[in-house]
Image (cartoon, rainbow, N blue to C red; front, side, top):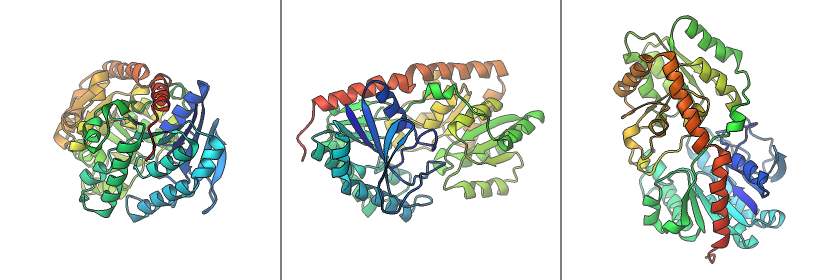
Length: 420
């Protein structure tokens, strides 16, 4: 198969998050297929964005995968400039449809940009090429900005996203979802269960074995805390309130009798407010560190005692979660504290026996989780971490997931619907 993936935010190990499109493309190439990725020149998820011209679409090869770079405006946070960047990318991709169809001659076109507006460009490419059309669901849009961002269903942005969701539910040959229970919602928008398959996010277990030394500045912070006899709690990822880092700060403040150090590694729209909260709480045992490439995270996780992930209470998570940070923690053998288990369809930490899950991402529950893990011996925490790593390799390694992904794409090619 010739496979073309349209993903505004696609990244690679050299550029940074997110890795799914690249990792699956590399695996599919290894199975005799040819993959290309259409990505935006700017993504907030990458540590390194490619050089770009404001008007020119560039074609390159990155780590063995063909890439087309579509100009997309820079932005900070989730405001108007991010919406403009979305429109930049999707409009230019739509205008480049004929070039993409003629140069790549795809058998299947995948719309995979988190937000659903790329379905229109992908559908146009598929029509021109006579290809099958697949939508890849990462997040529940427009439900995500509605439920987490508080936007009304009558907001023009939400109405636009709703039309795009309805379009792919009616017209895609197949929807591949990283969320295990999304069909509960999508069926109400016109998707039939036979056109729905689950292939979760995963991890490159080969790359995970090739780690690089983390920055000395980061490692020095953790080593100093360790030398002082502190129990190190680490968070790595985007700094947003939906990750309940505010609750984590309050939890660390609540824990008495345990010498703690909290290391928060990453960046995001709420970095400033989180630093202000730590300052207002008078916390001297918190370090904010810059993001690092995935290859450097292993050494930092090894220097910590536990790794934290949390989700705020929301009906959104009844459809499931597929948090990249959980897979990264688990494949590294970290003992994980997960907060918010009562609200999620799939609690991976409990399923894998990779640590401790607490019901709610609130300070009291998180503090209790820290106490429970602190009470274990280092060997017991290491056993939990090993359990998570083993589970991750069996179920979430991209070398395993690619078989399901390949089978889904072949099915879509055999069941192509008439394009409307």
